[in-house]
Image (cartoon, rainbow, N blue to C red; front, side, top):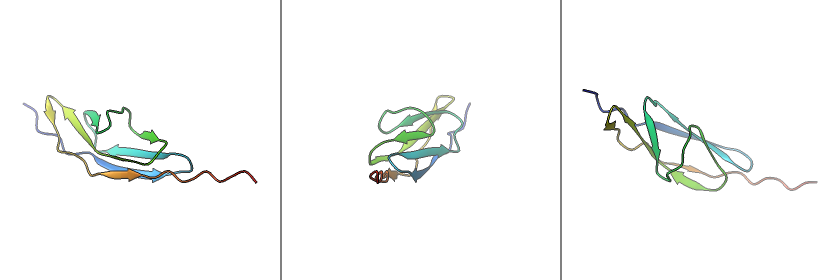
Length: 77
């Protein structure tokens, strides 16, 4: 019998043109709120995400919510 896994913890880094969202504390399979895949996630537009993880048939509580806001790419000189 498996214990319920802890909720992942999300962090976001906003870069020029994209943002990276990373889930930490992951021991299982992630299910993102937008049905995306991967860890870390790279997003190109403003979006708010949460995630859960499944391990041994048990699902964690929902992670914290983060909002990615990629920075504008500066115009060429």
